Image (cartoon, rainbow, N blue to C red):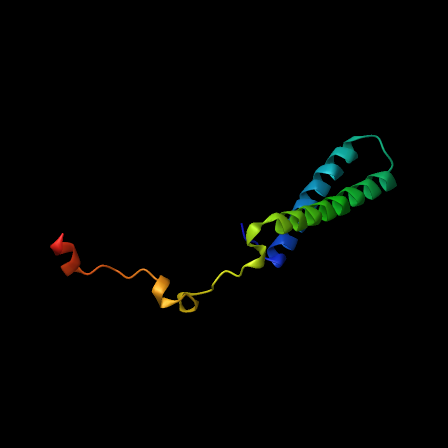
Length: 94
């Protein structure tokens, strides 16, 4: 799976926001002070973002294609390796 750095950062921010929101909802139900709720929610959000970023770096390191570039178009592929379409005359011979 190929994902850009920008898409990875956006995904990590959204994951952190969702986990922070869930934590905030759970902690607002509990009888805690407001400072404890805010600081705990902030810590869960930051920890989720950094854990997701570290996990992305590990996955990127373990991918076998990390040293290879993916060609952007057919122009960068040599003509000898391209598949040419069959003509109708070839289909009639068989």
